[in-house]
Image 1 (cartoon, rainbow, N blue to C red):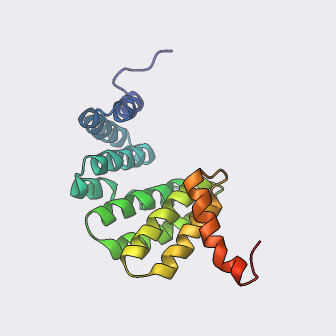
Image 2: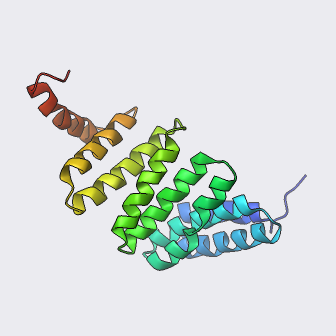
Length: 183
């Protein structure tokens, strides 16, 4: 059985391909069309996923307010569906859009909510990404100790560290070792 070339699933896949190739305007158009078509057939979950992807592309294009508009309401859709993993990702995307539009306090709150949703998940990669973003916001917000704690959590969440992250982890471990509490 061949798939309809105009199906929202195909539009979404093509939009993702366009994004990966750097054809951002094509990706925007594709995700917008996919979202619209998913909504027309009553598929709120896939429409929300297309909206999240659209938000990511718009942020990449520095169209921050459009990105925020695209992602608003998607965490609640995933929450109603009982999908805490997708809710966490949507909260992370919402936080990124809020941060990009200068709404830093709200962004911090969304990142913290995303981490709460991820407690039920074993997705360490997403957890690490969110902790790094939270750390960045906390550092800029004048909360250096919170930022260090978040960054340490991000490093601890990564199963395989690159050389830069291994150096950071050793630096974070240094005070504990000096106090006789570390490895």
